Image (cartoon, rainbow, N blue to C red; front, side, top):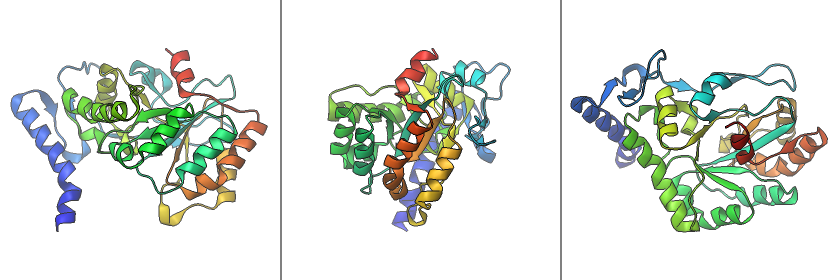
Length: 281
């Protein structure tokens, strides 16, 4: 019973916050039917910014850029990204880090071997439970991005203050650990968001980072076949890809060295995410 209460507590907290906002007249809208509540400080003219969305991609032919839920033109308005230029074989490697189960050191070893920089999106728990790995990421030139402190459904966040708090608690923990401010790259947990969330992130000075290549690698007890995974990730790689992998995947730890070699042989260069965000400003 206690475990069940702990599991629903974050949701109840978010619901209470939204109800308070409604009572005060700060927000409009509702959270019924999966809808998030909008901040009154955001201009919503001409767009349904309260609709809850799940980031999705649709793969095409081998090597082609996928279809994405929002166009790059729309994303640009919110300082958000899902892929880079189609003109060059540059790709951007990212990992979501919800917790540590022993696979990250091997992933870091492979990246170091190939002199490759990646971005690791971490939650608050990861900073507390794997501080030495975070320090290693920084020391080896990787970027550490913000995956929120509690990994909530961010589409249920209804105020700028609540949104900022979820991100800034991660930044504070990171600064205490490393002595540095965290780069302002944010990835919504589970890819759930509203256009209002994207506006909130921009208002807080963050870039929202989605992806254009991912596969089912997060189920620990049902890890994908290494050979098939390499084939899939090579078949679907495309110019400008932002690749999403999970650090908890034993398959990713096993295949990353070979995968990076294959991408290199295909003419791709893994570039820092900073290069993409700077080039598209």
